[in-house]
Each structure stands twice: as C-alpha cells, then as structure tokens.
Image (cartoon, rainbow, N blue to C red):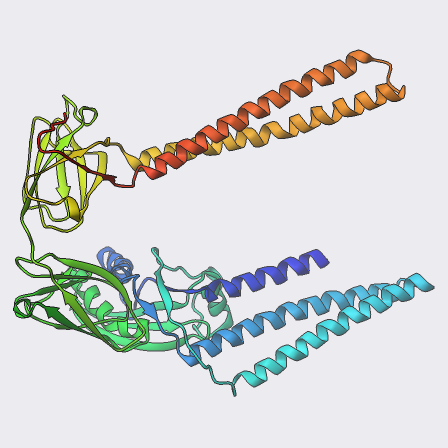
Length: 505
C-alpha cells in the first residue's frame, strides 16, 4: 500500500514538473468547425494541416518572456501538486498508525512504533501547513525578475485523452492532460466556412491556469491554407513571445555602403538601403552584404533590449588568385572533385590543380566528390585557407581525404559501444573465477579442500578470463581512439604554402 502511494506521489510531481522546464513548449490541436453541417474530407484535412502549418511558420529561435500571472499560476500549480502528494503521504501514514493501534500489541516495541508513526504524521502536517502558508502569501509577493525561456515547438498535433474531450480548458482534468504532455502554450481555433472561404479564430491558451492570452481572426481560402497559416502565425507571434518587437538599427561603414547595402534576417532579404528592421525577440541569423565588399554574417539573441544599434564595418572584397595543389591520395580516376569556398568567385580543375579566386579573408572550403553522373556524393572534406596565405599567385598544397564523416563517426561510435559492452560482460566472469580460485586456494591451504586439481582448474580459468578481459580492454581502447580520430575528421585541414618552384601532385 505504501509503495503504491509513493509511486502515485512521484508520478503526480513528474507530470506537473514536466511543463515547468527551462523551455516553453508550444503545441496545437486540430481545429474545430463550429457550424453544424457535414464536413467534407478536404475540410477535415485542412483542419488538421492548418495548425501544423502555423507551427512551421513560428521559429524555434524565438524566446518567450512569461508574465507575472503566468509565473504565479505555475507556482500555484506546483504547490497544489505538492499538497496532493503530501495528503497522499498523510493518508498512508494515518493508515499505518491505525494498523499499529488495532494490532493489540503492547510493550516497548509497540510504543516505539506508535511514536514513530505519530512523528511521521506530525512532520507531514507541518509540511502541509507550510505549503498552505506559501500559497496564501504568494498573491502578495512580487516577482523581482523574469527570465526569457526558449521556445520549443511540438511537431505533432496534441490529442486530448478520452476523459478530457468535451471539457472546458479551465477544468482540472483538461489542464492535467495538457501539463502531462509537457505543453505550456496550446493553439486552438474555431472555423466557419461559407462557400470556398473560411474565417479562422485562433486562440493561444497558456497553462497552467488555462489563461487565454490572445485571440486573432483571419479570413482566407481553404484552397490556399499556406497563406492563411502564414497570416495567422504572424498575428499569433506577439502573443507567443509576450514581448514587444525588437528594433534593429544598422550603421554601416564605409559610408558608400550605407545606401546600397542589403540586410537578410533568417534568410529573408530586405530592401536595399533599408537600415532599420523590426523583428520578434529571439535568436536571429543576420547577413549584411554590399556589392564589392565581404559579406558579414552573425547570430545573436535579440531579447534583452527593445532597440539594438548594430555597427558593421564591411571590408573591400579582394580578388586574389591562388593555385591549390592536391596530393595524389585525394585524386581518383573514376570520380571528379568540386570545390567550394565561402568567398568563391570561380573554380576550375586541371591535372590535380585547383585555381581559386578568394576574397582576402579566412576562407573555409569544402571538397565534394562527384559521382559519374555528375551528382554530388556524400564524400566530402573541409579545408581552411588562412588570410595570411591569400596572396596573388601563391602556390598552396592540401593533403586530406574525402569521406562521409557522419557515417564514419556513427560507425566508430557503434564499435566503441560494442567494445565497451564486451569489456563489461567479461569482468563478472573474471571476478567470479578469481574469487573462486582465491577461495579454493585458501581452503586447500587450510586443509578443508583435498583436491589440488580444483585449485589448478580455477587458476587456469582465472588466467583465461583475465586474458579475455585484457583483450577486451585493449579492444575498447583501440576503438575509443579510432572514434576520437573520426570525430576529429570534421576539423578542416589547413593548407600550407609552397615555394614558387615546387609543384606537388
């Protein structure tokens, strides 16, 4: 009985804590048609695809700033969960005490057990009193600081369990189902259809507390639900982040770039010369470019301030020609190579040489081995050309090999696990034989065992199992080294400079 109560308490706490992680999880359920009429198969499919399309339009790089009310609801839910667990413990403790009383026993042992049970009940009651005091004082407390939480998107639709279907989101059963799924925000919507057009009213509900923080309505065609989802997502994002948009002010030098520079944020290119952008709070990938200058790229979490001044100094793009000589080990008769660098202007290959035009900055390059039909294979290699080696006419040499690094790392990791498993399996037999040999030897020396053959047999078994364990240890060390070397294979190979008169093939 006590074990059942303990397990129930643990599950209750875990279900509540699942939704209070550092990440803020956003999910959606299939949308609902409010009109009483027959729903076609295409309309039913749209009700399931539309919420998923909305989630796709919301970037996981966003962060949410929880409100004080939301944090208060989380604390209240946590305290409520603790009270339920304490009450279950109290119930078990009282039943245990009652069973001691009605057992009819007496004496010192009886009194000791009774005192222990009474003390346990008293401790639980004190914890309950403290919990109730915290709950009462929570409403008068002010939260001093609020930390932003990373947004995580649920990839599949949330489906209510059978016992919660038809209930209001404010009901405890409904909230428990959402919290058990680890969901902090749930997107729901009602759809009204007239002809080929639909009105979608979507709401964002925050849990625990089932507080509707925002509702938006959009009208569109059911034949173009992608556009409808984009508009709904754009309207819901401010409620998801619970923060004002962030202003980005770009200040570009040199001054001649200010009028024709281009800014791209998360892959979206904005108008030329537009130095002020409005984005949602969160992590964004920014790219600043200007014709004739080296493109600058960076990522940053724009969530601590409403306005950011971004100063970017663009460097002139230099056209530096270098010749890259390849080792024979990199060349193959049946496959050709393609070369890419971050500043690549053109590329040609001939007789084991690659003619590259670089931009005067550190350049990360990639070699891709091509199949016979010209398609790209999974055999690749990375190389780095430092800025100091980028001199026009410079002869460079590269020694590396193309391979499928991801597959190689996975293979070596699997073999490392196998070697480690073999070592672990061998150790119990080694210890067993060693212990039996020591026991037999001591018994023989003490005179309680007359069979010397038994001692010899366990001695041989000990050496055999020790040898197997030693071999497994060596096997594990070798595979671990091979795994570490495979992990290092993704590090770009650095080219080296050659004297002008030296040619390598």
